[in-house]
Every structure is written in structure tokens, then in C-alpha cells.
Image (cartoon, rainbow, N blue to C red):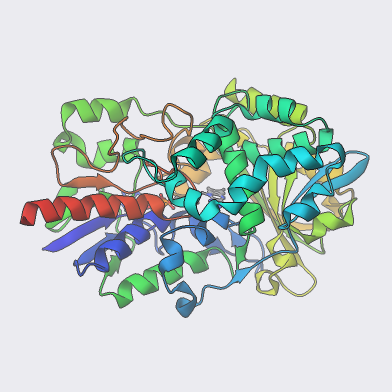
Amino acid sequence: MYDAIIIGSGPNGLAAAIALAQKGLSVKVFEAAATVGGGTRTQELTLPGFHHDVCSAIHPMAVGSPFLKTLPLEQYGLEWIHPAYPLAHPLDDEPAVIMHRSLNDTIQELGADARAYHALFAPYIEHWEELAPELLSPLNSLPSHPLLMSKFGLRALRSAEGLADTWFQTKRAKALFAGLAAHSILPLDQISTSAIGLVLGIIGHKIGWPLPKGGSHKITKALAAHFESLGGEIETEAKIETLRELPQAKVILFGNTPKQILRIAGNQLPDSYAHKLRSFKYGAGVFKIDIALGGPIPWKDERCGQAGTVHLGGTLHEIVQSERQIGQGVCPQKPYVLLTQQSMFDSSRAPVGKHTVWAYCHVPNGSTQDMTEPILRQIERFAPGFRDLMLDYHTMNTSAMEAYNPNYIGGDINGGRQDITQLFTRPAGLLNPYNIPGTSMFICSSSTPPGGGVHGMCGYHAAQAALKYLGTKQG
Ligand SMILES: Cc1cc2nc3c(=O)[nH]c(=O)nc-3n(C[C@H](O)[C@H](O)[C@H](O)COP(=O)(O)OP(=O)(O)OC[C@H]3O[C@@H](n4cnc5c(N)ncnc54)[C@H](O)[C@@H]3O)c2cc1C
């Protein structure tokens, strides 16, 4: 009998496992795939010697995570690389907008919007250490910094389109903010889409947007090694289809999303809770392309080559249009594309002189449309001659995404739609979102607050809920 069993070895499952093992509990993790990692694996998807991040690539949330930063992950080989610039946002016929780590250097890029940009981000950059634990927690406690949180909330609750249009005057600042906010994978006229833009901007300036040396897999490999050093057990190639397959345990934590939990736990869920899980909404999907390149990307603006991430979508209006179409069930012909170029900063990713390119765009949930051409056109727009350097490429549509990781329902990489109705209380609209009421089961995946991203905070909070439950039982 184990104290705790965890299904899924993504960053949240492993964070939960560590938080429980730290308290001396016996913990076992079951993972369907052959290796741990969930959304953080790195593989030779194209040619030998080209190491591509299959899912996540850039990790400000991991470095800024209040829980992960307490762990000795560097002892297990995790090393962060900071590109010269966290982000570049190229525009037609003018220099790209560069988001520097330095706020002051960034405002030099923004002309008439220098003061506005400073006013939007500076108060929160200064107070990120207080803000982070609040933002990365469920809503079940009063904020310890209510004034700071309410000021942040007033801006964060706005639509990104509305905020960018009214706060800024210039095309450059509007486009930069739209690119940040479009990480929400929501139409940008929806309320609260500013929140993601603000958080990513704040941590871009406070922490940077780093990548792990050797690939994203290094993060979960380090988490797994640390967990095992605490006495934890991991079994891979063990896809759990029903609870009957599991050994006995005092608590079970699901690193899965509602659809899978309904299937695995079936009739052991309270009826009203199962009903809520059935109403859970999944978000848009992604189409991803990984490319082996014969040289660096020939950016029109050479500074883009020094940025870890490049947002290819053009103006605020274009990005709004692209994300709106996805909300309407249409694949955009001019998609907003997120591109990273890890090998520019990490020589272990590709053979000498060659490079890896990671790029994806949003598509309607479940879409199987091939977005290779629209993505390549957006890259060529800002880097003419790019296609001539392509040696090989590998694509994944939403079905391939879900086949790769059963948590990506319809290609949704965030474990559910992150809109205002679900963001803080997902998956069942409860203030304590981790417990499955009346059972010894918990949810620790990104389907709980604070949602998608590699930060482990869903796992950490779920582990705290499980520890509280076990404490009550013993008491
Ligand atoms: C293309 C893409 C790009 C992304 N980019 C970034 C990025 O740059 N930065 C960032 O922070 N985040 C990024 N993300 C999101 C991030 O990867 C996820 O939010 C994060 O991995 C979620 O962690 P998790 O532990 O909740 O679930 P996952 O990482 O999805 O892990 C779930 C694990 O559970 C296993 N599993 C599922 N069902 C079962 C079962 N029945 N039995 C046993 N095991 C099971 C799966 O195999 C998987 O290993 C990206 C994701 C994708 C797909």
C-alpha cells in the first residue's frame, strides 16, 4: 500500500510527487509513455543530431515558480540559458520591436509609448515576488496583498484588444502586447486576455524567458531524479485505464484532464461532480512544426536572431483577427505564430552550423487542417529565403498532439480553456479545485489553477490539499 499514487509524470505530476515525498510519504507515479515528462520532452524529430522540444520550449514560469525554485534541480543537470533578448516581434517595413530583459531598454523601442509601457509594467515587476504566489494560487484564500492584487486585477480583467488599443498609441507597443496576450489561446476581445499578456511581460522583464540547456526534457528529468532521491517510485509504459489497475493507496492524484478522469474513475465520482466534469470546456488546439535548418534563420531584422522567442503575427489588428477566426472555428491563413530558435543559444541542440526551429500556431479544437504553408509564409514574410535553408521538417496536428499526450484533448495544450469562467476554479467551479469532493482523489494537472505552463504549481497545490486530507484522517 502506498500513501499516494499519481497518474502522469508531467511537471505537475512530478511536482505533486515531490511535495508529498518531502513529507515522508510513500509515493508512486504511473506514466503512460516510455519516459517521464509530459509536455517537456526533447526528441530527434527530424534528422539525427537535431534535438527538438516536442512541446514546451521556453520556461519563464518554471524559473519563476514559487515551488520549483525551492528544489535543487541544478544538482540533477538543469541549467538555464538566457538568450540576449527574451522576445522579438518583427513588423513589416520597420525594425522589429525587441522586448529586452531591461524595462528601460525596452521602452527605447517604443517611441511615444515609452511612458505608457513603463507605467503598465513597472509596478508589478517591482512587486513580482509578492504577486507571483497570489497569481499562481487558487482563489480559496484572501490575498495577502489586496491593494496590489486589485490594481493588477483591474488591468488583467480587461480584453487584450481593449487594453492595447486604449493604453498605447503606437503600432509597435500594440503589436508587442497583442503577441504576449495571444499566449492565452483565446480571442483577444475576451475579458481577462490581458492577464496572460501582463504576466508574460512582467516575468520577461523580471526573470527573462530562458530555455534549459539540452532541451526541455532536462526539467522533468531533474524533477524525476530528485523525486527518486526522496524515495519515490516511477513506473513508465503504464497507461492507467481504470482505478482497478492501481495498487492500494491512501490518496490518488490525477495528472490528467476531466475527460480522462471521467473514463478512469468512472462511477466512483460523485454524480454532481461527474456532471460538472462533463461540462468542462476545452480550448483551441495547436498545429506544430519542427524544422532542421542548414543555417540560422535569415531574419530581415538581424536582431531577431538574438531573441529566444519570435512572435510572427504582425500588427494588433492582424493578431486579433487571427485569434478571432480560431474562436469562430476557422483556421487562419495569416496565423499568429510562436517561434523559438533554441540552437542559436544552445549548441547541443543541432550539428555545428545547423539549427533547430520550433513553431506553432493556434487552430480550432480538433482541427486536422495542415497549417505548414500558412506558418512557413509567416516565417518567410519576416525572413525571406528561410525555405531554402530547410533540410527536413516534422509536423503535428491536433490528433497527433493528442496521440502523443492523452492530456492534449483536441490539441488543447493547456488542459482546458483558460477563460474567465474556468481560470480560477477549474475544473468543476469549486473554490477548492483540487479535491474530488467526498473521495480520497485529487486532481493535480494543468486542468486546475493556475492552469497551463511548466510551473508545477497545480501539482504543488494539489499535494497540499492531499496532505491536509491525510492530516484530517489521521487526526
Ligand atoms: C506545443 C506546445 C508548446 C508549449 N509551450 C510551452 C512553453 O514554451 N512553456 C510552457 O511553460 N509551457 C508550454 N506548453 C504547455 C506545457 O507543456 C503544459 O502546460 C504542461 O506540460 C502541463 O503539465 P501537466 O503536468 O499538467 O501535464 P502534461 O505535461 O501534459 O503531463 C501529463 C502526463 O500524463 C501522462 N498520462 C496521461 N494519461 C495517462 C494515463 N491514463 N496513465 C498514465 N499516464 C498518463 C501523459 O503521458 C503525460 O506524460 C506547451 C505545450 C505544447 C503542447
